[in-house]
Image 1: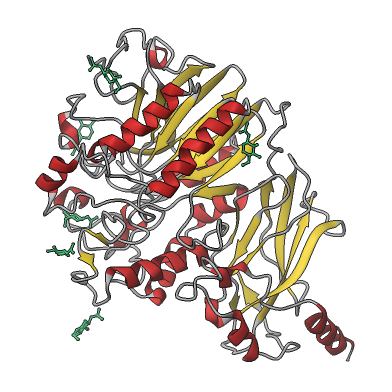
Image 2: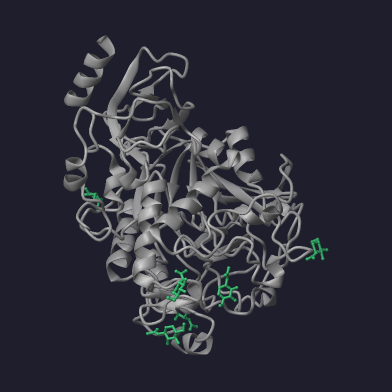
Length: 559
Ligand SMILES: *[C@@H]1O[C@H](CO)[C@@H](O)[C@H](O)[C@H]1NC(C)=O
Ligand SMILES: *[C@@H]1O[C@H](CO)[C@@H](O)[C@H](O)[C@H]1NC(C)=O
Ligand SMILES: *[C@@H]1O[C@H](CO)[C@@H](O)[C@H](O)[C@H]1NC(C)=O
Ligand SMILES: *[C@@H]1O[C@H](CO)[C@@H](O)[C@H](O)[C@H]1NC(C)=O
Ligand SMILES: *[C@@H]1O[C@H](CO)[C@@H](O)[C@H](O)[C@H]1NC(C)=O
Ligand SMILES: *[C@@H]1O[C@H](CO)[C@@H](O)[C@H](O)[C@H]1NC(C)=O
């Protein structure tokens, strides 16, 4: 009887779907994308929710930390099919062993409409504080999720913060290898936050192995020998994308890194389709559906982005602009992390393989943009603003490789790659102009996408004023990281996977590149490939580059 009264009161007083941000995926103002809370509410009695056992097979996650709030995520699985909402209480505490002093909590529902995704935002948290969180079944207080950890950021004008460490990851292709990179970073726990630059999932058929270089031995990708991610075809419907996220998130290593750190993510092309631009991808657009499915590109994209917002701990940035994920994170006056979207937002036509020559002809076109005018303006304003505020490091988190490999004569990278910055020279020039004209120091561009590590000074395309030996005259520095597990363009090989960690202090920025020895098995081996230092206001790699010491790869000086 007591239990019933408690349930009734809890249901009446607080629990509802209102505070579950999964229904905003991505924005409540975009009816074709978001779920209609009003209609969903009508289908459920306010006091009735599922009272059986709940499992947490896809773990827990936190993300997008600010100086007073964070996004918490989980995805409960009721142990029996039941039409009623599932009610979870999220709890935030400063002590992982003491849940009697809860600093933030709420009972929030999730339903089948969002496939039981659960995304909440505790507020009123203290800046620069480490917190722990968990989710409790409202109907059974002993039915609890694992405990996760996150850090709240400093306030924008905090000038006491003197160190920050980011783990930078990209291109995590489950069937091609184990997520040893995630496991190692979680275990070493040297970073404050995880930054993921996209290709978090892949949309194509998991054991498709379309390209020989992506296959191993018997024509199969590595991991599918033991597990083929669901569904076993290229994904296009909302259900498909949700199912694919479930496959990825069933991985214990990925769960471990989500549990141990708050993430800041941006998407790339494969969260939607291969080589996307604003109105299409390599194999589809709104006149021709893809090779493996029947929906238009726009519909596929809407499904993909909806599932992304349901499954990842990311905020709605602008309710009037459901496509927007470009946003920034401020770490006092030490660093700004400016996260951009070069793929899904407003990118002009890219290389779709059948049009490569045409795109090469358009490379210099001044109207071409990777970001679209609105995002570009915001980006340059943020750069200038960070500089004027006296914010030291400006970290530009974006998807694609910045260097011009053709100019650098790196033949292995298929000459120029018009799907990267090289296909959008005017956009590159506008960014460099902004840095140069405003004398903005300490800009570091970080990238994923290419499944290889690339480190360089950033200069004008024509190298004006740049000394290749000393690095003097450079405008900024670029750190691109290899894939967590996606195969490299150089073949499926050991030590080509990994990630890097970026350590920022008042005197220098240090990038430590980790190589994963083998993603074909689940193992904890990794080694430091190289360590690069950028001194405050130097705007170039410290010489000798990498201290002259590498355990993998090569240093090249190019004129
Ligand atoms: C992307 O599309 C190109 C051109 O159709 C193809 O060669 C490549 O294999 C595709 N990549 C993937 C990962 O499907
Ligand atoms: C759509 O894609 C097909 C090939 O997949 C291509 O032939 C066609 O030109 C594209 N249409 C537009 C409008 O881009
Ligand atoms: C696409 O449409 C064809 C013809 O209607 C149908 O046979 C096929 O099953 C559909 N494919 C998918 C993936 O829905
Ligand atoms: C920087 O931007 C913030 C927030 O948009 C604004 O309040 C502040 O005045 C700007 N500062 C400078 C120096 O432009
Ligand atoms: C090189 O490019 C910069 C930036 O566009 C320009 O200011 C400079 O004049 C160019 N130098 C030469 C020698 O073309
Ligand atoms: C794998 O990498 C090693 C060392 O870099 C290289 O010698 C070898 O040729 C590579 N194998 C393949 C198949 O690419």
